[in-house]
Length: 136
Image (cartoon, rainbow, N blue to C red; front, side, top):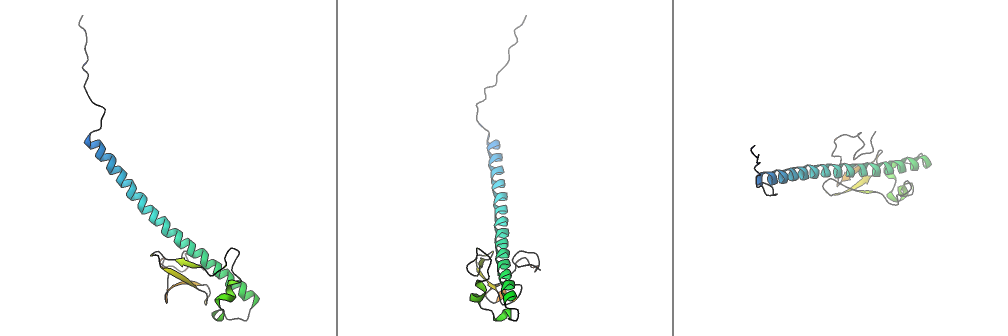
């Protein structure tokens, strides 16, 4: 009877260059994908913060007009309106745009809107979507 011998291949426990390249490529792809999603979530959060700020100003406008029904909202000062802001708001909100610019809430019209200098700021291009505006 013959003895059966098996040949053992002498393979070290390392990885091949192809395996390492695939892992690095996969990690780079996942990092890129995660980075794109983080930017989208950050932009959405800024829009949501702007919407909440404008809703607070809108609530203050309605509360002020309920106490002063003959007042013209265009003539109401910031100091007069700050008293009517909802709980947790002590000053008129200041919002950050997608580009990092400071936006001011224009409280002289109803519903209020965000202004970047002298122009209306709403990157969503819809006046009733609830982001960057008080909605309709």
